[in-house]
Length: 130
Image (cartoon, rainbow, N blue to C red; front, side, top):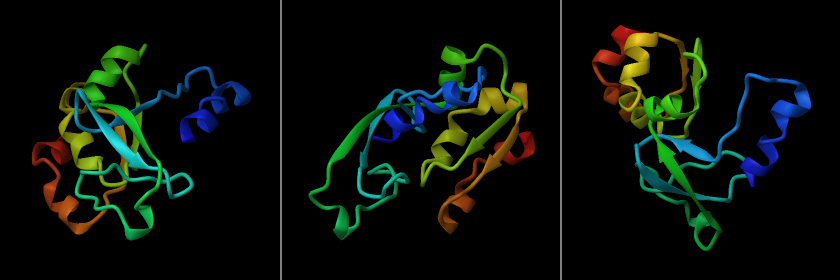
């Protein structure tokens, strides 16, 4: 549902350098399931996120997940200057799967980490590359 609503925004606003893909950023070469119960912000199941009691019986959406390096290799016409991540518990996976772009392209990264455990899990070499 979110993808269908989001995919029209770039063209509607004349943003030629913004593209919306029906993929999740996180662990590479896998699929993630999301519970469609939060009206927009939905955390992937199985990435330290336990579905709430209110989520039981709700529709789930299965989405391909790829790492940042893999996504940029496939879709980017030029190296990114800015990457914003607010992945509802998937941030650590995105950081671990983006070491090439963070190390060689060195974009500005805006990052929201969810939970104290995630702060302690940031790969040691990522902060030094940013």
